[in-house]
Image (cartoon, rainbow, N blue to C red):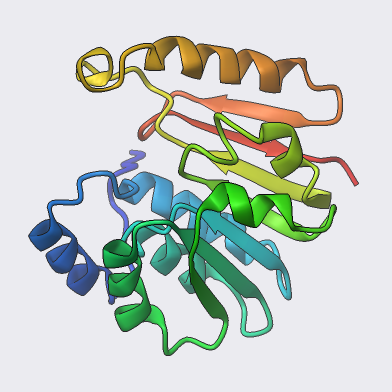
Length: 196
């Protein structure tokens, strides 16, 4: 029987989750999403990986566990108090660089075809600067987004968010330079690849 919730998380995740809870941060990636990120990271030996929206480092922990020793991760987070958790608990890993910066500002100064995998988990790179973000993918690069399944609190907390998600999905599906898979799984995912 297939049990998609049987996932062994990174050992550090328990400590990250405890501090995340204490901060009241509720938007960390789900274990299923993390499991997928870990597996995809493992397909990019020596790769350059980008995470937009570090939060407290839950997604970073999964990515780092999948990466080989020569791969590198840059993770960008605007909120310093969240990033500090990731820096404290994951910052000794020399493969990781944690930046406290607006993701939009970061994206605007990057060179095209710089990254082998991009996990966009914040507004910039997903709902804004999408074309610029996709231009950063190397041939064979992967673009991953989550939180696409409609939630009851969206319209209360984020009016118009359902329409924004629908427009994003339509935009991605129209792009001739990407091959993508929609996944009605975890929080709702899209994995897109730029053919090599």
